[in-house]
Image (cartoon, rainbow, N blue to C red):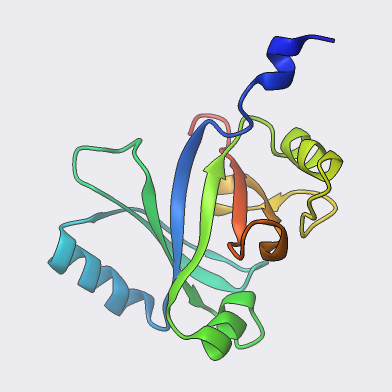
Length: 149
């Protein structure tokens, strides 16, 4: 057994903090005008039913992002979150080098992950989520960035 590999950190960085919003354009304007954040990426994820934007501090393109998530259809997870909880913090995302291996490690520790296999995330990343009941009430997203990101 390689003790060093066993003790290697699962997480390499805080990737982003996700905020559920009812109106993406209004939320982008608020964060731009109030905090000076800039949109670094925007897309529609049809599979997850969201319109999303990643915002970052100027001059810090690799830093932790704020992800704004607005529903693109009424049956999406974000629409259900907004109906249940209203706008606000929805998830904390950790960057990992291998999301499938991270999920295996967490399952071995008795934690539940939401999907059997990772799904497509922002900018073609691979993602999965740790069940909030197993992470202190926080929905934790595991993000493996796409090649070149």
